Image (cartoon, rainbow, N blue to C red):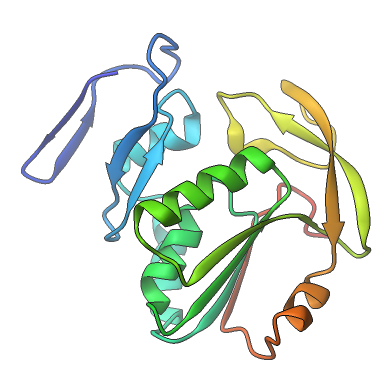
Length: 190
């Protein structure tokens, strides 16, 4: 994959299906934070190409969240919203992110570290209506954002993951007010 970055322009010079290159690439988002992304993943390809993901939703979040707020990111994936929320709340705020996929948690933690966002944390847990564990389908490396507790096409493995209630996690941290709760857990919202 060849990337051309000049005068604020970011251009992707190859198809996301090109598997010959898949190391993590540093990407500066249009929102003011950096991410390490794998360009062979479709989500990452879109973010590399556009510099932003879900522009209308990102705009709404930027209008709702302020310095010092506490926010929750349920379904952190590679940490796009986790880092965005941490960028918005600043050091006086807090961001608590959760994801069932251990690979996604590692990516989100790596991206928080890249940006020095120590006021945000990522927990590897599937948010649920009960405490315990459950089966989780990890999606292919080309579509990492589609991992789910529900059966999905093209999953690479099924793993057992811890699950727990959001209320318990908030109580354990002494959190009694949340400004924004972002939920993107691939169909498990119900």
